[in-house]
Image 1 (cartoon, rainbow over the protein chains, first blue to last red):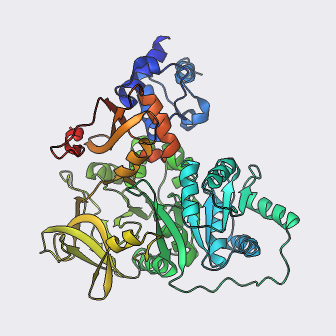
Image 2 (image 1 turned 135 degrees about the horizontal axis):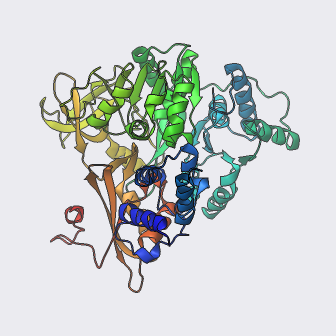
Image 3 (image 1 turned 90 degrees about the vertical axis):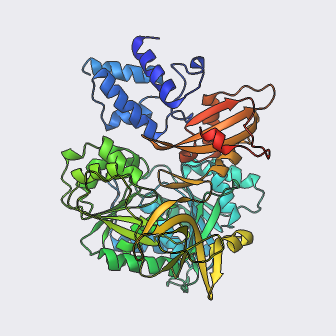
Length: 84
Length: 501
């Protein structure tokens, strides 16, 4: 797991899954269909990512079909950081 | 009627489409007084199904297309619908759940095709006409209905785990719509938002007030309605003049919508209902939208809006107390009573009870609940809201809280008991108790405390996932706590107070 993925995972565990065993959440655990992130949580997470990584995420990046799990979300963050 | 980015229909086109729905329903044997269900995402098509059902003299029963199929099937079966319209994606799970409930034969299910860009209902009706032509000689007029005939049944959270159906008549709807006309003075130039889903009673204002006044209605679907950036843009682009939603959505727009980017010159009214609007958030919103008039509307599904309050133009910087729920709507009467049903003194806390043409006739097939729901006095039936209020000055009410275990989450009614009932079905759960605790940021956090059955180990993710299969999304707890055993009081009841700490 790289640093970006770890940062995202820690935030999700602390904010949305208090008390959960860290091993239960992997980088490929689906986040939306499992109820871990609902629409409000997604907005909260996006806000955190924008601030933490100094990037701007648009409406289409918040679209649930764009990313399913930490791995995909981390890839999106990396693309934005690299100006793409 | 406008679907942003999609279809637009004139009143004339809508009239023609709804006539087709009416005729198809009649052909299927739907009679005045029957119920017609719909499990569809919000589009011109679902609106046309609703109006077509009304033209056939039936009552429409909307269910949440995003809730588990089992819950929707329970509702449609409970009130014995004679026909169901549904989107393609939910048809199989819904059919399967209806079959499991054992009612035979199943009501005819009219499934809208997936593709068809805004003309899916037309496509469905064309297909039906081709395979099952409607006999000629069908009456071309709408059914005759009376003011006390049912117009719709809206299901709301039930404390025992089963949703209950609020039966609302034409009189209930029209007395309210007329009141809206008097207070908000809609014209043909207005452009109303339809943000609330059709199973939520905020939709009654959205759908019928523009209809009654020839105004335009802009349908905001489920996805757009939760995306603050896109929604903020749509409200400006569509030149919405009347916005009605829960405070949660307004707050979402303020926090994440980047409202400074757009021109909201068309917006003249901001109406909100469903939950308390924290003053700090209201002040922030007004900083972005200073021009419109703002109204706090209060009332349970059983009465629709029963009190109202216009927020002052400027919200003082030092105000922290939420604004009052206000004065009784002119078409209704209210009282504040104690546990024995006697009026309390002005300034004393009591339960708000309501009577008048806006008040429901009762819950569908729940005679005991109906008995308990009303205080019968001086020949009138007063609906017990369960909300505690204080009358501050003559006729002005301030909300003080609930008697029971019902809370609001994003404006939706949530019986904590319904969450408990849902979670206790999980094989690994021995006992569950759900509490709601205030939270500075989120307003309210729902916490589920669980004791596992011997030999079972539960995880948060597993419980979240399970919740999604038995409860609508807004009822999924925020926090899951796993305990050896639930704390008990000296009389051996679950100690809810201890759980809140």
